[in-house]
Structures are given as structure tokens and as C-alpha cells.
Image 1 (cartoon, rainbow, N blue to C red):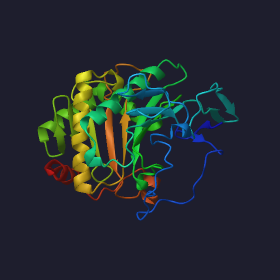
Image 2: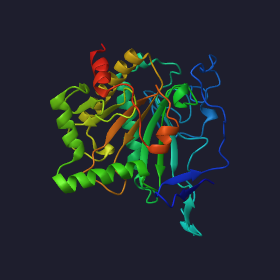
Image 3: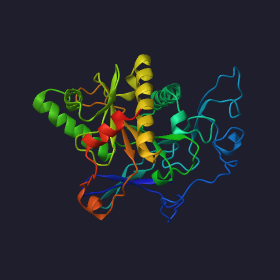
Image 4: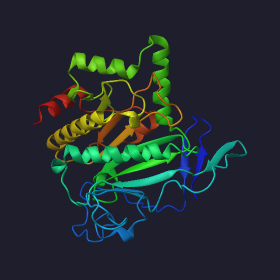
Length: 333
């Protein structure tokens, strides 16, 4: 079983799992996925290769679970980062803190089509994906062991996506990750000083300046953040304040799907269908309706590699200004 260990200096939790498969090779830019995908466990007809589905959407009335005919399928990960069974068993080991690696790790198989191209993905596709993600978050909220849920997607070899077949992942954990807690604490300090949400102020500033805005619609805005860490890093935020991703309405989900489709189409055209990571930062499960935190999505194209300077300092060197990146994306048709 994996276990959490806490760094006593900065309070960061890490997951130690010696049983997990270790691949010492690092993906190179020349690597690609195999052309023969008949053995892909995510393809229709290969449902027996995965664990039984947790959730599935299908247009076929009365479809038998774990058979073909699905439009989207959610399954437990065959090699989960965290295990759903067991107790946390928080304990000390001398000066160190540790606990069992309890949580949930699920795969959202987004489509039965193995090699669908980014340009072919529709807004309806994203809407179905977000509805499934929200359904899983709402269900996992009932597990009192869990504190945080991250929805993310790695696309392409350079983003360490093991399978080419389009899929997202959900990991529920018994801690709030340090990266998220830093965002929340920073937002809380800003709110204490100005009595306003820093993300709401950021949205107003970006819409006013317009220099970094990539796209917007009725409910959402996409922009390259002022202090972007990576080239073409893009955030998508709801214009109306909300700390919890799973609290959005049906109209907002439709709007979110539309702007997601637009932004990824632009990124694909400008950056030639590059690898990327996509993640959603939402509020902790047990801290609902936070007045100073704002859920948001972050898109990180895999265009540069972080190395010693970044790891040693926490500083990032971005060779493309967010203003230029936003201009290129905004003008992409």
C-alpha cells in the first residue's frame, strides 16, 4: 500500500509507493504512440481489460455495464496512486509524520474513439466530460476521509500520457495539496486586506486591459496569466464568483464546454497540436463556498523543460510574454 510522508521543513506531503511501476526512461520529442492500438484497454470491446466501470453514459437504452456501446466511461485506475480501501492510520515515526495512502484514483475515458484529433473534439464532448467529472466529485464528497479532488489530463507523450486514447484522471486524497493550499492562503490574505476575491479582481483587470485575454463568453474568460510560468500557459475562470467546480449550473457547464473547445482549438492551431497538461483547481471538499477562493482551470503546453534553476529556486523563466502568447491565440481562427 502507498503511504503519505510529510516533509517536516515545508509541510509538503509526498506519496511513497515502492510497488508502483518505475520507468527510468524519459520521453523524448521523437517518441510516438504505437500505430497498432488493438490492445488499448480503453477501446470498445476491451472492457474486460479494465476494472468494472463506476459510471458510464450511453445512448443505448438498457446497455449492459462493461460492454460496448458507451459514449463515456469512468473506471478505477488499474495502478492507482492511492487506494480506496483501508483507514488513514495517521501516526508518527520519530519526528516524522505519515499515514496510509488512502484515496481514489479514477480514469475518465472520454470517448470510444481512440485517435480522435483535437480539432475534431466538439463542445458537446467537453460538456459530457464535465458532467461526468461533477457527478464523480459529488459522489466522492460523501467519503469523510477525503479532503481534496483534482481533475487533470495529460495529453501527448511529452506530457507523460501513457495511453493515446483520450482520457482524464480524477484523484481524491485525504490532504489539501501544498500547491492548492498556497493559492488558498494567498487569496485569503488578499481578501483580509481588500475584502475582495483576488481572482475576481484579476478577472476585472484582465477584461479591462484585454492584452492577455484569449477568449470570453457569457460566463467564462480565458487569459494568459500576468506572471505565466510557461509559454502559452492559459487559465479559464468563471466570471461569477464560485469556489467549487461542482457547484456550477447546467448553463454554465455548456458555456464552459464552449470556451474550452475554443481555447484548445486555438492552442492546437498555434502550437501544432502540442502535448499539454490540463487541470482544475477547486476548493477543498470540506471548505464550501469560500468567499476568497475561485475555482479555475490551468492549461500548460509542454514546450519547455524545467531543470535545476527552476527546481532549486521555484522561479520560472518564460521565454514568451503572456501578452504575445495571448495575441497569437486570440488571433487564431
